[in-house]
Length: 139
Length: 139
DNA sequence: CCTTGACTTGAACCGCGGTTCAAGTCGCAA
DNA sequence: TTGCGACTTGAACCGCGGTTCAAGTCAAGG
Image 1: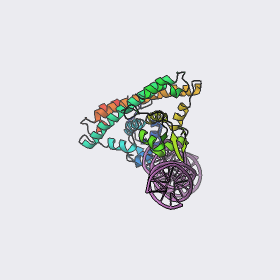
Image 2 (image 1 turned 45 degrees about the horizontal axis):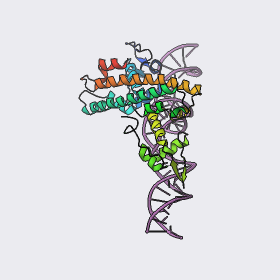
Image 3 (image 1 turned 90 degrees about the horizontal axis):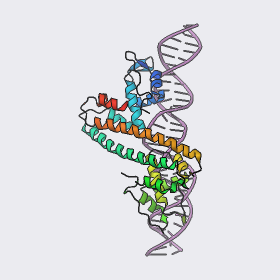
Image 4 (image 1 turned 135 degrees about the horizontal axis):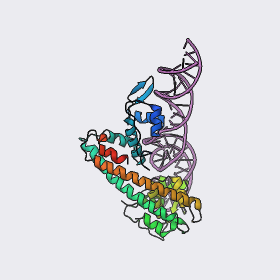
């Protein structure tokens, strides 16, 4: 699965979006959109009465936010990265750190995957004590 | 980095362990050990006065628990898996599902890594708008 | 004009994964 | 035997990432 459901969200330019439309297109609850706005991840472009309106680009932004969230980034971290400029050395450094962390995470997930894959078909009793299972985890 | 700090925890058999020793060797807080026990992930072997004592094998178990936690498994899920027997078809199926989920997670992390790697050195302003950055995330 | 219905707000609440706290209890050394 | 210090307990609290709720406000349609 990709970060977006179909690999690409259809974005109709020209038209400003209602919060309900954004919610539906991104799969996020309206409450989540308001929450993100309060946290500084997201901006609504204006109001129609009380109702928030959004420029179509927020869909891309939300796609990115969704992906980062699912990759384990905190909201604070995402905000830092979204606000980054090329000149911001500190954020760049943080990004490089994150790359290293992601490498570790990926390796860990791969080990877990391997062990679990084995466990799902292993006749050991109890499963946890299977030497191959344990060995894969201990690296 | 491995799941264990040095890739292998030294386990002295023969001796039963104090909670403080277990905490130190695993890097977990004593409060976390009690918490895990309450949740059914862990058993203490007995008491010395009020003090919990642990068999050395819990170190392996905790190593496994640590690894699974960091891989994003919930405590409830870990408990299910730890209690599994080879005959338990439901748990096996759940494990197989988890393998598939892990595949997705791994793919997502790899995309994030890629984008972030690029972003950390990209002269685009603002970074978020860099086409290469976005493209990597949208799959 | 008045209703309807979807939004608005702030505040309260939720589950998760623990940590912290107050009060109590034990082993051990002096 | 009397401390001391490290543990014990349950309960309260924490940050995170939201959701839910009550009360209010708006635009549009009849």
